[in-house]
Amino acid sequence: MMTSYEYVSAWLQARCKSDRGASLVEYALLVALIAVVCLLAVTFLGKQASSKFSSVGSAIR
Image (cartoon, rainbow, N blue to C red):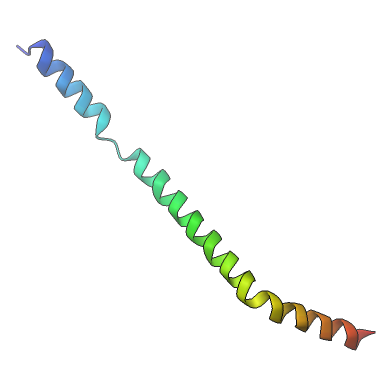
C-alpha cells in the first residue's frame, strides 16, 4: 500500500514531466530569431532598396 507521500510524489512527477512548455519556448525563440534577421536585412538593404526604387520610379516618369 502506498503512503500519502508516495502518492503525492508520484502525482507531482506525472504532472511535472510534460514537455508542453518546451515547444512554446522553442517557437518563441524561432520567432525572435526571424524578427532579428528581418530587422538586420532591412537595416543593411534598406538604403540600397530605396535607391533602386527611386531610380526605377524616375525611369518610369
